[in-house]
Length: 337
Image (cartoon, rainbow, N blue to C red):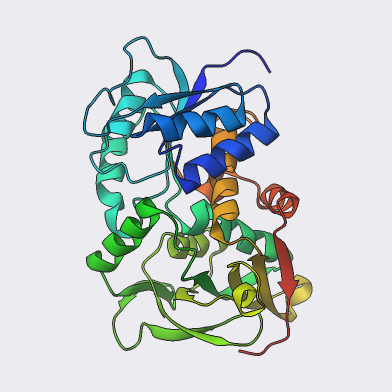
């Protein structure tokens, strides 16, 4: 790889940002990284651990992000909520790829409008999906042998001790304030469902039912439109994980239930889990790193300016191989729903 400008990671000293930087350093040792945060000491600590990385203070309230005027970067990664869209504007004005993870379905409109108004200025990857798109990519990988998909139901169990740092907790609170309704696709129609229909239970991998609810999340339209499935739902639960019940650290589980047909039109069902013993952070880090890799052209052909989603850019089987490298596992189960 030739010499590149540095990848600017906003929120690079937080859980998602630091995990992303670690994944990128492992995959691409020569890729320059800039860890940007509000606390220079914390950012410098992450940079020192990575090696061949720099640290800087960032101010998301400013249009120039408070960065030196002569700073040169290859991409901007918002590993936290870019609430004023200054990170996006910074990328657009310099023609840089931009990736975000925290807008969520309920906050995505300003980001989409800003991107649509300047469609040729930047390549924008909207990755405000569960674990930065890993849930979608894992489902597409698991369903690769289906000929037709009639229904997809995802159930994620996030350990209550693994909700993330301050930025992650703020995201959850903001999304909960915006809406308590869930977005599903039912008989081909995207539909909002409210209490009590949104309430449900997610079966953990050890059989325990964890209370949760259907949520409004980008995974629903991404999976529905990528597969053509007329029925798609994403359920989310926060509680004690199977890993912690076994006496270990907080784990994460993403249950994938699919119905459709296989080759030849035979009825086919899938009941599988994507699990990681160390919780959501490694999955989110891989999701962001996969996006950065594609935006920079480090894997696959160049990406054209415009708005993109993870499943439109990232090969699901390749994503599964990267997940396996970090200890994630697909576990098939019997039909116990």
